[in-house]
Structures are given as C-alpha cells and as structure tokens.
Length: 72
Length: 429
Image 1: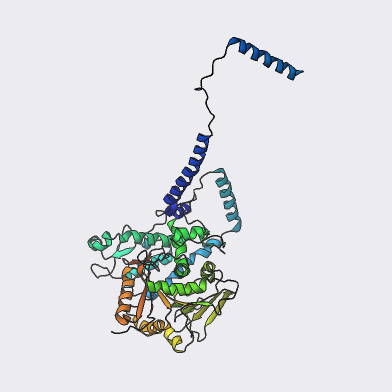
Image 2: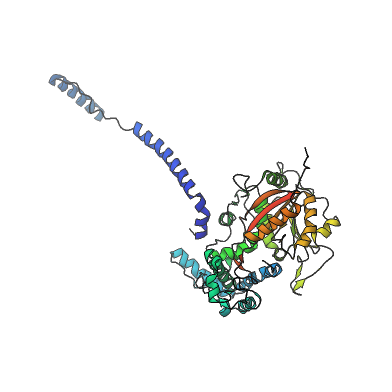
C-alpha cells in the first residue's frame, strides 16, 4: 500500500473494520451454530440392556450364517 | 496587506513551468530506469531513488539557491519588502525557513506572532516546494487521470480520497500534492461545489445555508436530470470566472478535469477580466473586443473575455442568466482590497441581479474576512449567504510566499464562501 492509498483509506478504516467484525461474527456465528447442532451424537451414556449367553450364541450363529451366504 | 495580488497571480504559472523540462529526458534512459524499477519492484527490493524529494534535500536558503530566479526573488524581497516589526528594510534570513523575513535577528526574535503561529514552518514548506518544482525530477503526477468509469464514484471528502477514487497517480509525498493541487484546485473547487456528492453539507452538519442548498439544487437539476434519454440542455451550462488571472492560463486538459466530473453535461467556462488573455509570446495581457473561444470537445468550451464583467453585463452579452444553468466563481477577487474594490463595486450589482450562485475564494483568513466584511458593508441587505466562509476542501496545498510581506504566507483558494442576490423582497410589517 502506498502512503497516498493509506491516507485515502484512513477515514474509512474503523468503520470498515467494524463492518468486517460484524459480518464475520454473523457468518462465523451461523457456521459455528450449524456445526454445534449437527455434531456427532454420543450414545455412550445410554445403558446397553444385559443379554444372556444362549441368546448371544444364537445371534452369533445367525450372523455367521448370513456372512457365509453373502460370500458364496 | 496583499498589495501584490497581480504579481502573485502572474507567478502562479511560472512555478509549474518547470514540469515540461522534466519530460525532455532522453527517452532511452527513462525506459532503462523504469525497466530496472520494474524488476526491483517485482523482486520486492525497495527502490530508493536519489531524486526522491524530501524536506531536507529540497531545502536551500533562497539567497544561495541553485536557481537564479529564486535568488532574484530573495533580492527583490530584500529590496521592496518591509520588516513587520521594525518597519525597516529586510536584511535577515530566517534560519528555519531560509527566506528573508526580518530586519535583524533581534526583530526576528521579537516577532511573537511569527513564532507563535509557526509561520516559519509554512515558509519552509513554501521554500522546499519552490525548489522541488525546479529540481527537474520526474513529474509522473502531472499525467492526469482521464474519463471516469461510470461505475466508480468520485469521493469528494478531501484531496486524498479524490485523487484515489479518480485514479490519479499515487501522490505519496507532500511535494507531489503541492505541485498538482495548485493546478487542480481551480476545476475541482467548482466541481466539489456543484457535484451531487459535494463535501459542503447543509447546516448544522456543514456550512451550507438553506438558500445555498436551493441554489445548488437548481444547478444539480441541470447536472443530474431524471431522464437522460432526452436532450435536456438547450444550451451549455455556463461557469463564469470573474477577474480571471492564472486560471485562464491553465492548460485545457486541467479544465477538462472539470468536464470529467460531469461527463454528460455540456459546459462552457467563461474567463472574464482584463487579465484573462495572456499572450505568452508578447509576455503581456492582450485585449480583444470579441471573445477568444477555444472548443476543447463537444462538452467543453473555454471563452476568454478581456472586458470587466460589468461592461459585458451592460451590453447584455450574457443575457439571459439562469440560476439553473449559470454559476459565478471569483477566485481570490480581493473584493475589499483597496486596488480592486472600485471595479468590484460596479460588478457586484450585476452579479446579484442575475440571481445565480456566486462563490468566492481567498488566500487566507484575513483576506477572505476583508472580502466578507466589504460585501456585508456595501450590499448587506441585497444578498443571501449560500455558504458561510470556511476552509476550501479543494484549496491548493502549496504554501506560497508573498514577496512584499514575506511573513504573510498564503495558499491559493484556501478559503471559500458563497452568496447570491436575494430572490424575494422583504415585506415590511
């Protein structure tokens, strides 16, 4: 920036800066809020219902059977 | 006071004459230098030109100045001017400004006003500006900007924003500003008043009175018509410059700058007064009974009239006047100056009769105050003030030395005010 350009822009510097800050905070706010509301859900606090061994074994067999069919 | 108004006027042009010589450089050297500068700027290396003007390298006491004409001016100050303190001849050169100002060192020390108002600083600037104009450096700032892109608005806040938005050469130093504003002051002062984005605002924000706004609104009605598809001007808009001196000698491209500000309006600039037509070959003012017309292009005509305005007004040469299309400019007329007031007393009634806006500038505060007082004293009840006296936004930034009184520094078009003949009669109750 040349000195002449700086002098010509000086009267508008603070207003331009305020406009920039205003626009940036608006856009930044929208972006930030959007990121906040679409953050990945954490289900870690939801208790997993207990499951007994026989049920687990049947489920495992069913799963393995399905996987074997898929591969064939 | 300013007893040498005429002298000062004649000198305006002299200073700027230094510019063409700078253009007479050998083309090849210039080309080589710009190529080198180009490479340096692309590489980001700082180019420190030895010819760069600074307040230090442009300073020389006038008596030992390298330029003959400045030495002659110093001698003429010593021969003709009187010391403001002792009233004797001037023998002492102010060590700060380098210009002879006082009779002796004692007188210089006793001059309270001189030191309190820091006149020496302005004198020093005047000194360095004069040396800079004669230095023969390159003057790229004299390549003025051309047509304004219609999508780009000109900002009239001050000289810096004006040059920036008009895409002028970047005026980085005060020296460049001084050299250019002295010429540009005349057209841009007029443009700044008439333009829709004028810096002169209505009271209380600015100094423009309601009557002033009425007059300017009338002019802007012509400048900015609603429907531009039709021809709206049945004749060019006329700018009358009364008591024209230096301004009539400005090259046409400087006046074209006024036209660039109003690209759709056809303008006619009329220079009126016995000193409007200067013959450079004869070196004197010449008289011509018919106007000397210079048609620059379809939108700008310059006319030189060598008679006083009141003579032409009596002949009805300019009839009819129209406040919507005519404006009067008085560039430092010296209304109240003893050597000029007789003529102005004959001229002013004609101006007031026309009901057109009249703007007048002054060299400095006391000069414009004297004009203002004189006008109020002689024609107090016959005119309305359009613009209270104030600093001209587009005055010259170049400080000048007044040879008959060197400690009285001034600038061209430094102050401005506006007036107009009353548009109605007062009704007594």
